[in-house]
Length: 216
Image 1 (cartoon, one colour):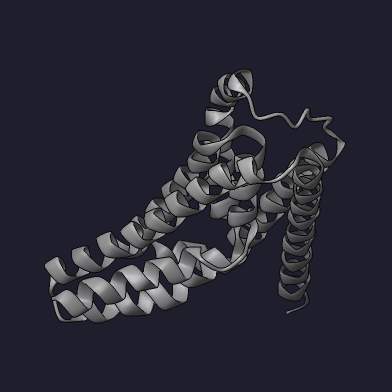
Image 2 (tube, rainbow, N blue to C red):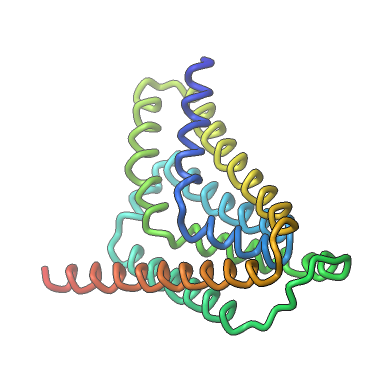
Protein backbone atom coordinates (compact mmCIF):
# COMPACT_ATOMS: atom_id res chain seq x y z
CA UNK A 1 0.00 0.00 0.00
CA UNK A 2 2.85 2.39 0.83
CA UNK A 3 4.41 1.73 -2.58
CA UNK A 4 1.05 2.38 -4.25
CA UNK A 5 0.59 5.69 -2.41
CA UNK A 6 4.12 6.93 -3.11
CA UNK A 7 4.07 5.88 -6.77
CA UNK A 8 0.70 7.60 -7.30
CA UNK A 9 1.94 10.84 -5.70
CA UNK A 10 5.05 10.71 -7.90
CA UNK A 11 2.79 10.19 -10.91
CA UNK A 12 0.85 13.33 -9.94
CA UNK A 13 4.08 15.29 -9.55
CA UNK A 14 5.23 14.07 -12.96
CA UNK A 15 2.09 15.54 -14.54
CA UNK A 16 2.46 18.92 -12.88
CA UNK A 17 6.25 19.38 -12.91
CA UNK A 18 7.10 19.75 -16.64
CA UNK A 19 7.26 23.34 -17.85
CA UNK A 20 3.99 24.07 -19.61
CA UNK A 21 1.32 26.76 -19.91
CA UNK A 22 -0.20 26.16 -16.46
CA UNK A 23 3.18 26.43 -14.70
CA UNK A 24 4.10 29.51 -16.73
CA UNK A 25 0.80 31.15 -15.79
CA UNK A 26 1.35 30.29 -12.11
CA UNK A 27 4.76 31.98 -12.25
CA UNK A 28 3.46 34.98 -14.17
CA UNK A 29 0.57 35.51 -11.75
CA UNK A 30 2.81 34.93 -8.75
CA UNK A 31 5.29 37.56 -9.90
CA UNK A 32 2.54 40.05 -10.66
CA UNK A 33 -0.02 39.51 -7.91
CA UNK A 34 1.53 37.24 -5.28
CA UNK A 35 0.85 33.85 -3.74
CA UNK A 36 -2.94 33.64 -3.73
CA UNK A 37 -3.36 34.60 -7.36
CA UNK A 38 -0.73 32.04 -8.37
CA UNK A 39 -2.26 29.39 -6.13
CA UNK A 40 -5.72 30.02 -7.61
CA UNK A 41 -4.33 29.29 -11.08
CA UNK A 42 -3.16 25.95 -9.70
CA UNK A 43 -6.57 25.35 -8.09
CA UNK A 44 -8.24 26.06 -11.42
CA UNK A 45 -5.94 23.61 -13.15
CA UNK A 46 -6.67 21.01 -10.49
CA UNK A 47 -10.41 21.53 -10.99
CA UNK A 48 -10.02 20.66 -14.67
CA UNK A 49 -7.85 17.69 -13.71
CA UNK A 50 -10.53 16.54 -11.27
CA UNK A 51 -13.18 16.67 -14.00
CA UNK A 52 -10.94 14.73 -16.39
CA UNK A 53 -10.13 12.24 -13.64
CA UNK A 54 -13.84 11.73 -12.93
CA UNK A 55 -14.52 11.29 -16.64
CA UNK A 56 -11.88 8.58 -16.87
CA UNK A 57 -13.02 6.95 -13.61
CA UNK A 58 -16.63 6.65 -14.79
CA UNK A 59 -15.70 5.58 -18.30
CA UNK A 60 -16.62 8.82 -20.08
CA UNK A 61 -13.07 9.45 -21.28
CA UNK A 62 -13.98 8.20 -24.77
CA UNK A 63 -15.70 11.54 -25.25
CA UNK A 64 -12.28 13.21 -25.17
CA UNK A 65 -11.06 11.03 -28.03
CA UNK A 66 -13.57 12.52 -30.47
CA UNK A 67 -11.79 14.64 -33.04
CA UNK A 68 -14.17 17.59 -33.00
CA UNK A 69 -14.00 17.78 -29.18
CA UNK A 70 -10.19 17.86 -29.26
CA UNK A 71 -10.17 20.52 -31.99
CA UNK A 72 -12.59 22.78 -30.09
CA UNK A 73 -10.61 22.44 -26.85
CA UNK A 74 -7.31 23.19 -28.59
CA UNK A 75 -8.67 26.26 -30.37
CA UNK A 76 -10.18 27.59 -27.14
CA UNK A 77 -6.82 27.05 -25.45
CA UNK A 78 -5.12 28.91 -28.30
CA UNK A 79 -7.35 31.96 -27.87
CA UNK A 80 -7.02 32.02 -24.07
CA UNK A 81 -3.24 31.66 -24.00
CA UNK A 82 -2.53 34.14 -26.79
CA UNK A 83 -4.88 36.66 -25.19
CA UNK A 84 -3.27 36.18 -21.75
CA UNK A 85 0.24 36.53 -23.12
CA UNK A 86 -0.52 39.53 -25.33
CA UNK A 87 -2.44 41.36 -22.58
CA UNK A 88 0.44 40.80 -20.19
CA UNK A 89 3.00 42.08 -22.72
CA UNK A 90 1.06 45.29 -23.27
CA UNK A 91 0.29 45.90 -19.59
CA UNK A 92 2.24 48.66 -17.88
CA UNK A 93 2.76 47.21 -14.42
CA UNK A 94 4.38 49.10 -11.57
CA UNK A 95 6.72 46.53 -10.12
CA UNK A 96 6.57 47.36 -6.44
CA UNK A 97 6.09 44.86 -3.65
CA UNK A 98 4.09 46.72 -1.06
CA UNK A 99 0.94 46.47 1.03
CA UNK A 100 -1.36 47.97 -1.59
CA UNK A 101 0.12 45.61 -4.14
CA UNK A 102 -1.02 42.65 -2.04
CA UNK A 103 -4.53 44.05 -1.59
CA UNK A 104 -4.79 44.48 -5.37
CA UNK A 105 -3.87 40.82 -5.85
CA UNK A 106 -6.99 39.60 -4.00
CA UNK A 107 -9.24 40.88 -6.74
CA UNK A 108 -7.39 38.67 -9.23
CA UNK A 109 -8.17 35.39 -7.47
CA UNK A 110 -11.35 34.51 -9.38
CA UNK A 111 -9.86 35.50 -12.74
CA UNK A 112 -6.77 33.41 -11.98
CA UNK A 113 -8.92 30.42 -11.05
CA UNK A 114 -10.98 30.63 -14.26
CA UNK A 115 -7.85 30.98 -16.37
CA UNK A 116 -6.34 27.93 -14.68
CA UNK A 117 -9.48 25.89 -15.44
CA UNK A 118 -9.43 26.84 -19.12
CA UNK A 119 -5.68 26.41 -19.64
CA UNK A 120 -5.55 22.96 -18.03
CA UNK A 121 -8.77 21.83 -19.68
CA UNK A 122 -7.58 22.71 -23.18
CA UNK A 123 -3.94 21.59 -22.93
CA UNK A 124 -3.41 18.76 -25.48
CA UNK A 125 -0.62 17.20 -23.42
CA UNK A 126 -2.82 17.22 -20.32
CA UNK A 127 -5.66 15.59 -22.24
CA UNK A 128 -3.24 13.03 -23.67
CA UNK A 129 -2.10 12.08 -20.18
CA UNK A 130 -5.58 11.50 -18.82
CA UNK A 131 -6.68 9.55 -21.89
CA UNK A 132 -3.61 7.35 -22.23
CA UNK A 133 -1.31 7.08 -19.20
CA UNK A 134 -3.78 7.61 -16.38
CA UNK A 135 -6.45 5.68 -18.28
CA UNK A 136 -4.20 2.62 -18.58
CA UNK A 137 -3.12 2.80 -14.92
CA UNK A 138 -6.72 3.14 -13.77
CA UNK A 139 -8.04 0.42 -16.10
CA UNK A 140 -5.61 -2.08 -14.56
CA UNK A 141 -7.04 -1.43 -11.12
CA UNK A 142 -10.62 -1.52 -12.39
CA UNK A 143 -10.03 -4.83 -14.16
CA UNK A 144 -9.03 -6.25 -10.79
CA UNK A 145 -12.42 -4.98 -9.52
CA UNK A 146 -10.66 -3.16 -6.69
CA UNK A 147 -12.51 0.15 -6.30
CA UNK A 148 -10.53 1.07 -3.18
CA UNK A 149 -7.26 0.74 -5.09
CA UNK A 150 -8.69 2.90 -7.89
CA UNK A 151 -9.76 5.53 -5.35
CA UNK A 152 -6.29 5.58 -3.72
CA UNK A 153 -4.56 5.96 -7.09
CA UNK A 154 -6.85 8.83 -8.11
CA UNK A 155 -6.58 10.63 -4.75
CA UNK A 156 -2.80 10.38 -4.53
CA UNK A 157 -2.33 11.53 -8.13
CA UNK A 158 -4.46 14.56 -7.32
CA UNK A 159 -2.47 15.15 -4.11
CA UNK A 160 0.79 15.11 -6.08
CA UNK A 161 -0.54 17.74 -8.48
CA UNK A 162 -1.66 19.91 -5.55
CA UNK A 163 1.70 19.66 -3.79
CA UNK A 164 3.55 20.83 -6.89
CA UNK A 165 1.20 23.76 -7.53
CA UNK A 166 1.35 24.95 -3.91
CA UNK A 167 5.15 24.71 -3.76
CA UNK A 168 5.57 26.56 -7.07
CA UNK A 169 3.21 29.36 -6.01
CA UNK A 170 5.01 29.64 -2.65
CA UNK A 171 8.45 29.74 -4.29
CA UNK A 172 7.48 32.39 -6.85
CA UNK A 173 5.74 34.55 -4.25
CA UNK A 174 8.77 34.81 -1.99
CA UNK A 175 11.30 34.69 -4.83
CA UNK A 176 10.01 37.99 -6.23
CA UNK A 177 11.19 39.77 -3.05
CA UNK A 178 14.77 38.79 -3.90
CA UNK A 179 14.99 40.39 -7.35
CA UNK A 180 14.73 43.98 -8.55
CA UNK A 181 11.87 45.46 -10.56
CA UNK A 182 13.80 45.43 -13.84
CA UNK A 183 14.46 41.68 -13.64
CA UNK A 184 10.82 41.04 -12.68
CA UNK A 185 9.72 42.91 -15.78
CA UNK A 186 12.00 40.81 -17.99
CA UNK A 187 10.78 37.56 -16.42
CA UNK A 188 7.18 38.67 -16.89
CA UNK A 189 7.87 39.46 -20.55
CA UNK A 190 9.50 36.10 -21.19
CA UNK A 191 6.63 34.27 -19.45
CA UNK A 192 4.13 36.16 -21.61
CA UNK A 193 5.98 35.20 -24.80
CA UNK A 194 6.02 31.56 -23.70
CA UNK A 195 2.25 31.68 -23.16
CA UNK A 196 1.79 33.08 -26.67
CA UNK A 197 4.03 30.30 -28.02
CA UNK A 198 1.95 27.60 -26.34
CA UNK A 199 -1.25 29.26 -27.57
CA UNK A 200 -0.03 29.28 -31.17
CA UNK A 201 1.16 25.69 -30.76
CA UNK A 202 -2.28 24.60 -29.53
CA UNK A 203 -3.91 26.38 -32.45
CA UNK A 204 -1.57 24.74 -34.97
CA UNK A 205 -2.21 21.29 -33.50
CA UNK A 206 -5.97 21.88 -33.53
CA UNK A 207 -5.99 23.04 -37.15
CA UNK A 208 -3.74 20.14 -38.19
CA UNK A 209 -6.03 17.61 -36.50
CA UNK A 210 -9.05 19.21 -38.18
CA UNK A 211 -7.53 19.13 -41.69
CA UNK A 212 -6.26 15.57 -41.21
CA UNK A 213 -9.74 14.40 -40.20
CA UNK A 214 -11.31 16.15 -43.20
CA UNK A 215 -8.77 14.57 -45.54
CA UNK A 216 -9.70 11.07 -44.47
